[in-house]
Length: 327
Image (cartoon, rainbow, N blue to C red; front, side, top):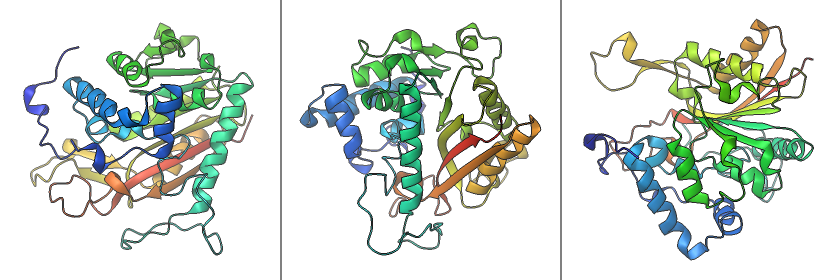
């Protein structure tokens, strides 16, 4: 495995943190213990070791921030998840405001995400198929299998096959998940032989920390390609999460005052990501409904006391569930 340039490997980078700054959830520890048979008292050292192996090749925020232990599909990494006890008082579907440091996250939202996960899980048990696009270490694939999905029902794809080796190193489950279900490919390449057999055969396409890596035109192409990969019927889904902003728009990727238009990136809000799915559906003659939520917590937003932190108070995590409503 080739190493990245030395200047990218500096552990002083703001997005290289200790595990204690973004600890795993109980659900992820359970996954390591019961799926991977890694004892709880060995889990942290194991995570840090695999992270540093990954960092040598991929010094990305996803690796440095330990985002690969987020179980985004089930929502277990969110402030409230589907197994959180019901809070006292009435349930209020509250949209967080970045001006409020004490955000009453929506129990209803995470309950909705949890129910969608249970529906996906049942679909796979009934013979459906799931594809994780840009899967990296593929924690959501492992979570599905641990929760009862047949191993032959889950697939992952990424541009870099080294991620598949790192996933097996992390989860120690090569005897459980078939290696040929992890496919090195460019998802936008319609002629790639590795993905062709799945076209029109999937029930769920999942984008975890992927869409924000592309420009707005390529994002539209990715969503349209996801629609093509799904079975041509109502009820199929596109799920995922991405880095977002309270207000969508083009923003400079750095603080350089001389940044040109080419240096700017598009940051989605929950409303604009909803429009991306629904308008793309209209363009291809389908009806889609997208449910989107914006969350400010942990490493996804401003961290007090860290002046060089690359995320501001307006930043957060967007989760989404898009469902096809038309045949």
